[in-house]
Amino acid sequence: LGGAATGAARPGLASLRGARRLRALFLVVFVATFGGFFLTIVALRLTDAWLVGALLATVPLFVLPMSAAAFGERIGWRALLGTLAAVGGLAAACLRG
Image 1 (cartoon, one colour):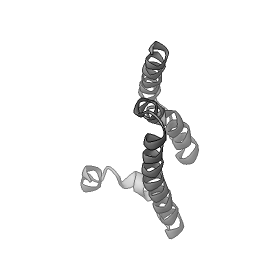
Image 2: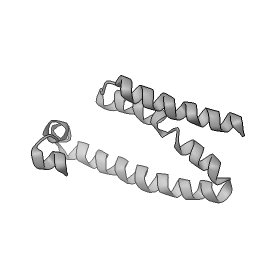
Image 3: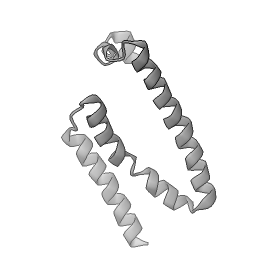
Image 4: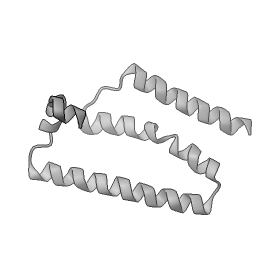
């Protein structure tokens, strides 16, 4: 909302012009939000909570390449470093116990 109010979001929103792209965006948001929530609940019901949490920590591994492929975004060193730190922490926690 802050970006929309100040006009900072305008360049990003310009790529969403056209009904087809907007429909695709809403479909992706709907499936990702409700599908992800549903699958998380199913996973919590079928396995241990620590394992579900560990798997959810791997989300940046999938989001970074998809955003680079879909939107042509460059993956910055901070995003890469943060992802590696999260995965390293996850690996250390899994290997420890």
